[in-house]
Amino acid sequence: MAGPATRSAVGGLLALCLAAPLLLAAGAAPPTKPPSTWPGCCGLPPWAEASPLTAQRRARPGALSQGFTYIVGGSPLRHHLAQTGQIPAAYAKLRNPLAPTLPNARAGAAVYEAHCASCHGASGRGDGPAAEKLKPPPAQFGWLTQIPPSRRDAFMAWSIVDGGKAFGTAMPSYKGKLSDAQLWSVIGYIQARLPTSAPAAR
Image 1 (tube, helix red, strand yellow):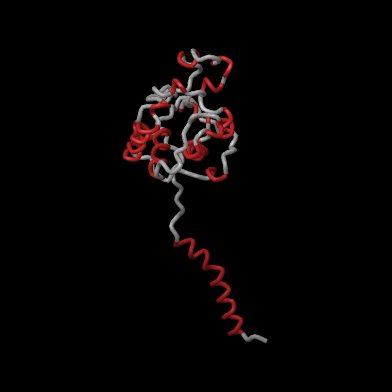
Image 2 (cartoon, rainbow, N blue to C red):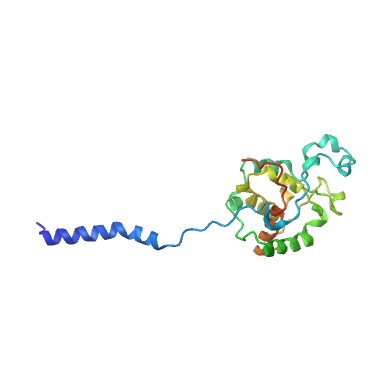
């Protein structure tokens, strides 16, 4: 039978074991969560809000019968998957690691000018000089306000990295063409310019 000294030693060891996780947690730095959205960052002018059938799109053969595709542009299926949270697992948990700062937004603007403006346009209406020949036309960025903020990073990374081939659009894949810093800076830049008058879906 264990004596009082043995029982005391065992009790002290047990108390130390139970307390150790609490002590470690108390000394650890609080977890940080990178920002997942940038709207309103940096004083940038907002994109034009997505609007039904611009004159350019109405003039296309079959435009009126194409409905959603010619209003918003891009892939209706991909838009639906984003709105309903059906983003591929490889992208679903991605979040922008860059802080919403003016230098990061300026870096994203440079990427946008080099790779995106020719199709998506200076105001995000999908009416850049190369858009005229694309069917379906490029997406309007104002539509992104309809994606819950928690899904925007994942959706945009998926769209940019994979491109639109699987959805029948001309959006090129930028896999291996953009560095991580370029990818996230342009995602942040596009989000920073989202219109704020339309409430985001929850």
